[in-house]
Image (tube, rainbow, N blue to C red; front, side, top):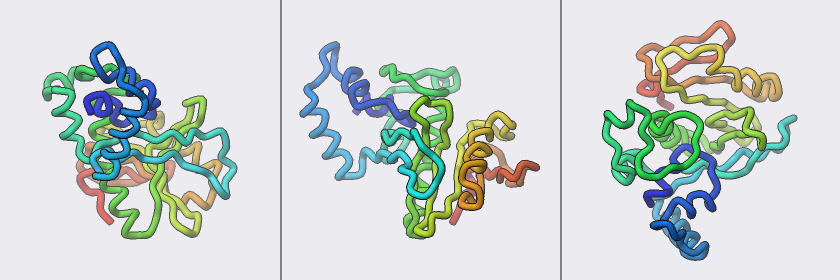
Length: 208
């Protein structure tokens, strides 16, 4: 569980999670798979699938899941990280390669939970999108049965920059009218729309 918590918000492989578990000797693959199956059945482990394109120009995407627990508080407890450690960029006791900080991944976790609840009510699906080379990534893509989608990025910042929205713009260029909106979820207090068309919404204001 601690190794899984350390992988929060990443697309690392189960092999790396398995290697991080145990005390120098990783558990057997069959044991890891059994625990994973049980944790997913009781909704403690809640991985987010990778986007599988059907009617788009996207290709060479990874289908590896992004790892989440049912509540980011579980990850904080398992990793034994304090607020001071998080603000200092601390990763806890398990070293799992990640893009960005553990704090950013924990901030992304409630966004994943909320988007999946709202999408289920709208009979839509949620996935993450990442190229196999890792040079392009969108945190969440919510897609309806009609093929129309909304893309979300989550940023641990109040005011996102052009650099923060570059992958959303890239995705818009490829999906065209199928991507009906682009959104950045932030730590801010006000919602607005950027000149490039990207909506900026504080996570605290996110709603159906």
